Amino acid sequence: MTFSLGWFCLLLPYCSMEGSRNSLVFGSRKRASQGAPGARSRPVAMPPHSDAGPVAGPPDGGWGWVVVFGAFISIGFAYAFPKGIAIFYKEIQDFFDTSYSEIAWVSSIMLATTYGAGPISSILVNRYGSRPVVILGGLLCGIGMVSAAFCTSIIQLYICVGFITGLGLALNLQPSVIIIGRYFLKRRPIANGLAMAGSPVMLCTLAPLNQFLFDNYGWRGSFLILGAILLHCCVAGALFRPISADKASVKTQSIEEGKEVLKEEVTKDVIEMNSPTNVRMETKTEEEEERDCCEKVNKYLDFSLFKHRGFLIYLIGNVLMFLGFFAPIVFLAPYAKHIGIDEYSAAFLLSILAIVDMVARPTTGIIANSKWVRPRIQYFFSFSIAFNGTCHLLCPLASGYTGLVIYSVFFGLAFGMVCAMLFETLMDLVGASRFTSAVGLVTIAECCTILLGPPIGGTLIDTFGDYKYMFIKCGAVMVLAGTFLFIMNYYNYRMLAKEEKKRKAKEEDTKPVRTENEGRNNWNKEHVQDGPELEPLREEQEGLKKEANGTNEV
Image 1 (tube, helix red, strand yellow):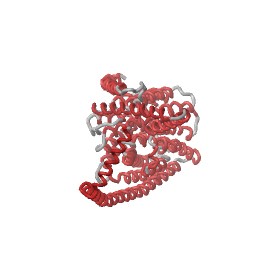
Image 2 (cartoon, helix red, strand yellow):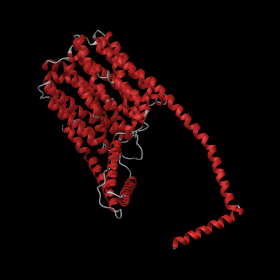
Image 3 (cartoon, helix red, strand yellow):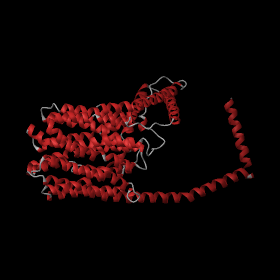
Image 4 (cartoon, helix red, strand yellow):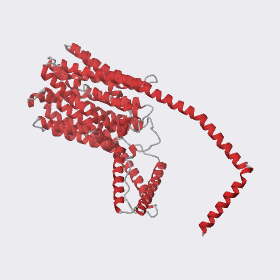
């Protein structure tokens, strides 16, 4: 804890710098509104935080690597904690006398809340920036796990571990992914790969640590200690210094806001003068309020993405993929214990998976950033999903501990490949400007299948008394998702190429027409100006103008 307090003291100057910058922006906004002549005093809505505002361009380095380190910690806890906590499931199941499907709901609710709260997290990031949202998420994680240590029923665990801790992890995951997109452009795949490597590092650490804590303090004492460890997410969030806009952009922003205030006042006065009755005025104000409400919602969540072909393909494929993505890793350690492997060896399987995953993520980021793969990164992503599903289909062939070790190695490789490209492929489709809204919409759609995946696997185990049917189900679903994405991305690339070809052809066709029209207009102007036969018409036109001016003066 003293180490954490030291970090907070070290980062306090950055917080004070942010506060002074916000006061400067607010002051300039206030002066712009006061400087509007004849304008009534009206409250001006504050724009989104500078973290989501217009900037000169991503720095692609510098403090961005410190931000990557903070994202490494927060993303690591967000992804690894729901898997690492599976070490306690066998003992909690015996303590509360529950079935496999009932205990699987703990991870399912946590994961579904982490993904389902994505839009809430995106809205908070757009409004307040990444730093305060991650700090709030760290506090919620600590509160949830400390409360879980005093639970007396499985329902209370659903609330404390599932909902409260899951919400805290959601507030850690989305801002960390978003702020990397603010700091990096050219090196973004490498930065995403390094940040995503936090998940296997944390899982590699948490798996043996959780077993050690359980042997010495029991599951209740372990939850207390884990709650204290999760508070370090607050320290990671303090590293997320927002990118500030230049002073010139602040000045132009204040001038534009002053103009907007003037425009609003003028339009309101015109409406009041022209409206014949109060009823029409009321209907107009109601329509304006509805339009403003829709604009505010669309400002934080861009629902026009559902008209984006590439986004819809990504969404459908990922929703299907998550039906079998998390269940194998949740049941890997319980499956090893079920076939007679000791507890520490079962926990070590997760460590093997995490070590391979740790190497696979940055390596995948480097490969995805290469000039051969990046233009067609969607194909690489589709292959990694299908490869992941193939590993699960072959898992039932591993009967002993050696076979499970081999499965863990290939599973870690495939899992790391998918996670390293999960958000990079989405940003490649929609762009950095719409990425915040896209992440929020994707995560809320994915939370349904994430919620159902592990309980369906637990139900298959309870029904057949064997884990192999759970692995076969997960493998088949993921192979299907990978095949769907590969085919549809091929179709999407073909359509994009045709659209680009049509656009270029249309531009080439309009060029000669434009040159002909411009030449004809110039020829007409020259002849109209120089033609002597049009002088009587000009004199007649001037006479008509004089007569009109005379009537106006009268």
